[in-house]
Amino acid sequence: MFNAAFSALGLDAVYVPVDTPPAALPHVLRAFEAVGTAGNITVPHKLQAAELLIRKTDLAVELDAVNTFWPDGDRLVGDNTDVAGVLDALRHLDAEGPWLVAGTGGSARAVAAAARAAATTLLVQSRRPQRAADFVKWATNLDIDAHVDDGRPVSTAINATPLGLQPDDPTPFAHERVHGCSAALDLVYAPGETRWCREVRSHGIRTGDGRLVLVGQGTLAFQRFFPDTAPPRAIMSAAVERALAP
Image (cartoon, rainbow, N blue to C red; front, side, top):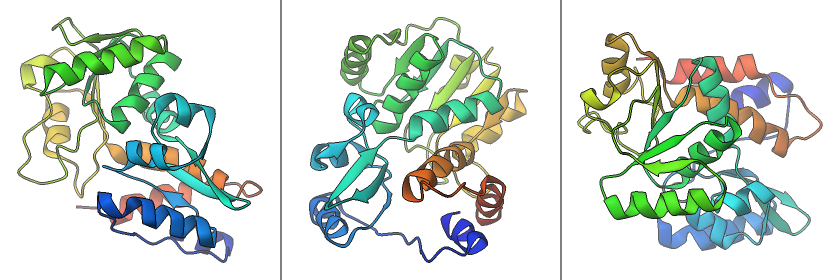
């Protein structure tokens, strides 16, 4: 996605993956800071990155989760573009509230902030009930209308867990829990979509996956990396679709 944008605009830049074990993250970020590297952070490092970076935007501080960083002087600045990416994706799906989210990590925090921006209720589901309760307490302190999932009807279901990254992963929700939903968003993206996306679409639910969020947050990250250059969204989107074609 980014390399396609750099090529189209003739920018002297390259985007590469850096596989980083959790124990190595502090050293990798310090190395990036030393050489003035910009980039993105994905699961499972978003919360740890927020603890490690000294300079952060107000939103990154509030969510305590970072997915984008860039150099400013001799420091890296951390930001969270996932919130805008989630909102962008849900607008594409004409999603309505209440929302139900599976997960309590950095991506779920972005969903919670998006729910606040959309002025909708958020129900939280986790395989560990105490984590859901702790997440709701955190969200409530940020004036988010959040509740532990109590089974009430919802209009939109959102997977903010890693389930779906592997073909044999279970689905994030039981089918009966999302019965009656009009929209579903899976923050995971995989070639040919995840099994959960295919299942909910087969029941007539408007469905999108992490590709929508990836492009939305990616264009915002591009603006952080190159503030004087407009991101070529159509080219970035086409690159993502090509890379993740089944």
